[in-house]
View 1 (tube, rainbow, N blue to C red):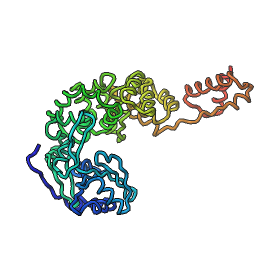
View 2: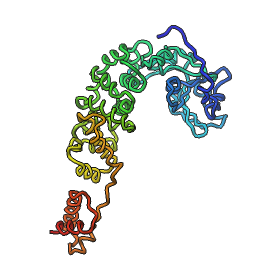
View 3: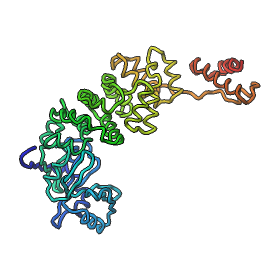
Length: 416
């Protein structure tokens, strides 16, 4: 941990958001009268990294009751989202701001913490996880850094504050957060002290809920350096504690390159399939281990359904049939996973044609109906259903013809 606090005054245009409503109004209400409120956490980190600032969290010296009294008097809505830990959500002009009173940990067990409120910005910063998450910005645009975050921002390094083992013992989820933040913000190799501390704590992950683990894994897989993070997790034995099978690390790395070269948005579930799913049973195991949603599980099952058959070698007729039967979204997932597992180069034209089939061909609607067969003397019942199914299969095999003569021939064969 660094010896003394560092400060950096940012240019006016860089902190223009501090002067914009409703944030400026909330800060004005909470500041003054001996109290100070600052922007903290991820908003500061992203601002300094030149990334989009999303949610804006605030920390304040004011006790929760003072916060509630002030914002209520100003006409803002307040929700006591975590008041036992000093956190309330202030809603101004429809925008939520999480406001937390400065605090320090009194007792921790790796999952929960007992805290007491205080007025010491340094102690509040030191109880956070990583140096790049522990900075704050006051209303005048000054960055306050008590833990070396500014230097680590410059180096694109993700480091625990103080002793890594101690930070992890306060909340074992920080093991997974270390790899998630590495995937999102770091360059080069993981910080060695943090990396080794996470390896030592890997058996403690069993104390965490599957929902919390899932949230971190999904965010990690969506991040820029997801493949590198998964390699690091595998090397420390942490991957084995989370997933149901051995990692397909080359497939994940190649999938990310395919996404980047084709300007396809990252998708965490698809990346999860690349690294951890080959068969239906893999999807079933992941559903239990990560408490996946029904939608996520269904996507993994769809991807695992013979993805290896969707290749240029099978020809475009098979690709069209697959697209017709499962739709463009599921087809895209399956084609990307198959490409990622292949040995083809990123510039392979045949794989490119397969991947972008939905952009150049729209599956037609099956042109024959029950009425068409009933007019040909087929009665309602099982025979009608069989005739329709046989006709559709023959129509697909014939590469979706539309002319009347071909359709009549298909219908007649189906009836026979």
